[in-house]
Length: 373
Image (cartoon, helix red, strand yellow):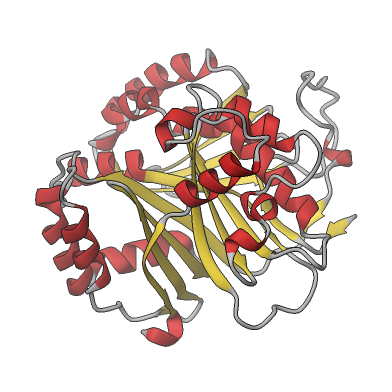
């Protein structure tokens, strides 16, 4: 089996996707759950990229259920699971389910079956395994009321960090907070179980205090004491990591972390995220390049690229933006909502490339590693 030593995560390798959802139902909720599942199943079956799904019940504990689904690749699933349609269609399940756990896997090898693949799906035998680093990455994004940005930045930068060690297998590694206008992006790195870490953080008094202090300034109302309100808010705020790459060389001294914001034209978020992911994978082979590592986060038409770089971004604007190579600036121009970021016109000029770099570079609010905790 071929293993890549560089890319530890990618939703753009062309492999089929297997999604596993573990559910623990409340007592007496089985019939309601089955009705909700039937409604969801019919809607999911019509989603482009969906291949099949199965509903399974534990033979040991009837309250434990399993839903598996298969998709042509990760991007169509991510587009569905992060959509408003998905938020609405799963609502009837919330009152049935005590606990859930979702896992997503690329299909690398397969035995038997003989089912023909769709045109866009790669045979499992052609997909290379990736070398992981034991770190899960995730981000949240939300907007605050215009005019409240400085107060929000003050709240987000002034909190006490929660305990880094979650359990014997899970540890908070790093939290990075950035703002772009009234948009907030909070990226986390976790060694071990991401869900366990997020739940651990949500229970900490210092974090609860910050979340409560933020509530008056949010554009989307929420009540974190109401499970349904909290679930909807964090579902809509989720900004999944779809690609991560680290250069195959020792980490240089003096790395600086930046977040770059790329608003996509309507419906082009997947294409924009894929472009940046492929560019960063190629850039990792350049020993002289400024970008040492990159993580691309994406949902809907929001793409954020978190980069660790040597030196200043403007020393090599094209590399810093992930646009090195013939025709890449033109490709981005076709996908980027330039008006939304204040950069209109051709990206083939040095002036507009430098303007884009300046406008895309998000304001750092706080960056904390586990050593800070």
